[in-house]
Image (tube, rainbow over all chains, first blue to last red; front, side):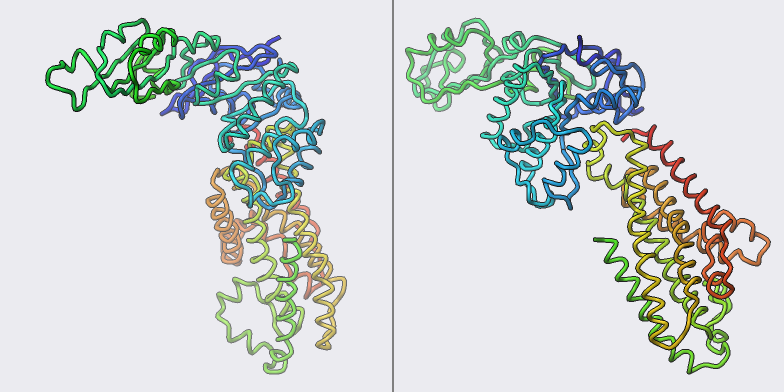
Length: 308
Length: 248
């Protein structure tokens, strides 16, 4: 069974085409990353799936229920957990009161366990909550009724690194228990740790859907090298080096800056061991290998465009 | 908690009005004071007489305090019930739960019934005890009636606010429009009275709740109350219809 199914889902605001003819599906038990730069239309898709806004064309189903049919969607929502990109709770209420409200409407199967894990300050009023605490309470209310499907919009925003780690481990366990996860993010490294498949959206259009391994091979790493002594550029003549930029600041006159470097930066999609082997005989000052910024991934593989 | 503060505020207003009444009563004969008021003001506030405590209360407390102040207050409050949740990003969390938009809207509106009922339950004893303290007698039935009949009136004003709350996404705009519309309706009903356009006033909730009539003549306009209930239902159903279809 498919947990989420989009069929030509479109949201046209007239001046902006927020979602353009999206068609894809998320299988039951899968962790699906919905990746795109800010403003790409991720939240629009999610809000259509939950019936907050209506599609201008096309349709979709969540857990087999038509998203355009409020009654059907309410049935589906009993088994859906949702975390908004900016979770909002009544500022006057305490964490406990919010939890009671959610328990009364959708039931409470496991809030104790979730509270122990995420630990938001339950006795305090929401107005005193930090952004991170609101996010923690949001995670508790999202999972407390033990839903079959969770839809998370930028779930780690506001969480500190420790909590991000805890959340990632938690999500892996949920996946093992068969929960379907649809989560949006603009951070590639976050998605790669957790997802089975990734859908990339840009400017409202679905660019690609790939298993995570494929995407990672294609996306590459941002590599920076610094050395004291000039390194011949031929060393970097290996597969997978793209957009090489090198310089030879303060270099001696007898070396041609186009044949050697002391500083360079490039995107690397090849075998990292091959790169390290090639560099091993040189004395480096610094070497950094980082996740390529998402924007670069888009530019490189899915065509340029200033509207990213 | 808000209901209690509101009731205390209105009780203080009532106590003050009753407290100053004896000095008015003793200082002026017949309706000298009333004669000193401009005719337009008398019409605007529908002042009948100020020589009897009933008339004084009808004008100072019920027309001013209930028809205008509380009418505006509940229109303003109701204008926040949906728009504020949307504005502050709380609506997504609410609608992600398995509840229909109609039910959510109805329950939010019904929650305004708490302050409306509480203020009208707590005030009659205050008014009656106040009158007794200054050696004036009031008809207990009339005082309870004016409060009872004000309940559908206040719900109708809240209904105006509710419509604004679903039509406008920004709560500050919804609340301003609700205040403006309610006050405009009050002016329309008062100013058009006695003119060729008097019939237009029939569209305003203020036409159907008249404190003077209740306190001075002891007549209770039950048809008017029925019309106010119908108006409220119309506002709620219209808001439901709109809210169920709109993009949040």
